Image (cartoon, rainbow, N blue to C red; front, side, top):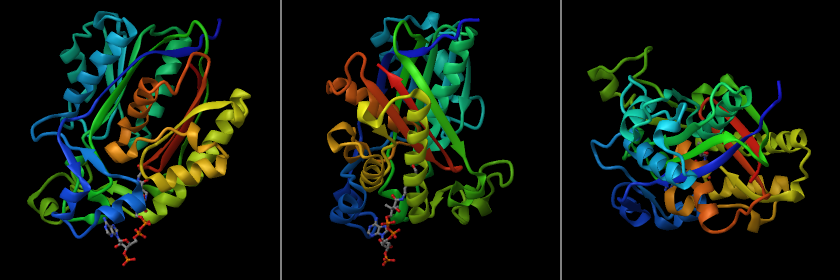
Length: 327
Ligand code: UT7
């Protein structure tokens, strides 16, 4: 059987309208605009309105991606929604999206790989295209991570924001995904987690009182592992694709912290002008981070036909990954 390559034929993203600035956060917790900007590179982030679910943001991003690709909802065979903040524990976010966008012929499921979700989902979707099992796949990275935020915890509440991005994947006529590397180390499950609300500790008045439903993170450890995990994954993915780092036209790292992005860029010796950064506007949007960045890089003309584009990502698990593609 001939091995096909998968390529992105359309992109779209959506972020909530409500902007939360550092100055507003100064009024909620003991922090400062100066600390947040200098330690994280973030100036503002978007926050979804109460009652809005991740599928709503996802559907808006998906409709844009469909329009951009010139593909109708009926043509979609499969929807993979990478998210850890689905509208509800079940059904999946992907099922809500299927209904919202009218993708009546699509099967749909969620994929949980936290901030690395989009890259994990892209690689998963690629397998279906390569085998010929599905022809048109909608890949979504979306999170309303603010639903896990403890607004009294300054070490996490300044970092995250909400958003969604989507791509349409099809067999590539040229270019497409050249290589990928995914990684996981379950020894680090403790570093970034939401303890309650799952099967081990379902919601009770006790779990609410003890703040078990909020995100907890050992930031400095995650920082170090993120730099190493993303850099190593990119080196391996480039080698697999036989692409030299000098050929990278646009490097799209997970947008968690400007200092992490800088450190990864330095390790890989990718010039600053080739690294796409929008963390200042959105903070860490978890699974949406890389795909929103891809959309904005395209909007800003930073990616042209035949360019080599590299994603690098990292998240709770710990999980990480890199993808090398030719646009
Ligand atoms: O998507 C993947 C998951 N997440 C990440 O990639 C995040 C990875 N980690 C990070 O980005 C960084 O570790 C943080 C931004 C979370 C923290 O930066 P840091 O340089 O590692 O700071 P730290 O945690 O070592 O804290 C330094 C100081 C502490 O004060 P003391 O103990 O030195 O007096 C913190 O209490 O900064 C303090 N601090 C703050 N001060 C003002 C922590 N958060 C804040 C804040 N405002 N918001």
